[in-house]
Length: 354
Ligand code: PMP
Picture 1: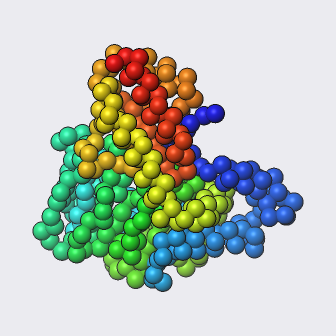
Picture 2: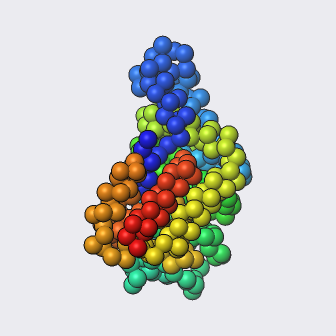
């Protein structure tokens, strides 16, 4: 048994992997692999339609929203989101809460004026900064969960400008009101599916107002007009997203995911706070439910701890180089039992070393 805490690409529900494996051999009873049929076939069109519809259902999206599955990852989403919403020489607000947020800022700066209205880099992004908006910005962009640093917005910021959000690492992990956002983008490879596609949720009414001429692929309106099939979509990634979204729906939707994820983060952080050998990176009130970042108080014990968790079958908790220590990613598909195994290893390590 392997307990997979990988930060992304990451654990998917077992049922999804099984179903996807079958489709690789014989998709939809066609006697052909999903990988060797036309994306214009009725069978695949149905997959794309369901993958889009499930997002609308799970998030109860109002009619004005469109759902797209595109390529280029959230990394291209940084630029795509900005170029679709920022007027020529525009004026937008961004929060710098980590590596990915900084990436979004860098791309937006290619297009207009970016005010960084909150920044946590002074403390290695261990907290979510408070902020105020002094102008009627075209939008505020933020990263809801900081995958590397292990901090997360606990609530949607209350501002009176349109909201744009990179939700790559916490989409569908708990209840939130998606109708508060003008645009959401999320790379699939954490809570939604395998790598290879990035999902956009966009308020159609907000598009086409920048006065810019957009390259076809970056223009979200061109994708909407073609039902997210402007060019050949990443068929396997979209199929796996559809299966994962079915799994989310069958397991209680956002409410079900929230319950599951709350149980996991409580199990982990309770042990972290109790254990005298470890400390967390994030301040308590901004802790991520998805990525728990922590370290040993005494780095000299690292080699022994590493041996112990590896022997227990735990995989993927080495920390990112910019934070060090450890990172336990607890995405939707991770069972609570896996967290219990990790908490038990930490407890046992304290017993032998403390
Ligand atoms: N934003 C966040 C919050 C992420 O966690 C990541 C990847 N880990 C990215 C953006 C970049 O995504 P991609 O590799 O899909 O371009």
